[in-house]
Image 1 (tube, helix red, strand yellow):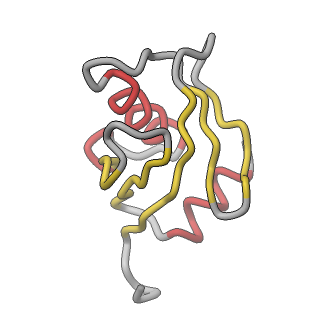
Image 2 (tube, helix red, strand yellow):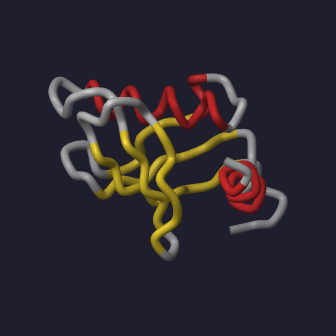
Length: 93
């Protein structure tokens, strides 16, 4: 990845049906995230993108699901920040 790119891919372990959406922490290079939405009809995926955009202070459209639509292991594309910026923002939580 070019260091001047303003987009990145982030590996996520999603845990749906939580009481609230929250970042649990890092498991190696994977970010574990609990989601308040159920894993039906794409609700958990939509909540993941919405939640990450909110905590990274980006527009909702900046976070999209790249892979893992029906899996707990997902990759999200984040536009508007580098992987280093995303990790720094997530580490502050």
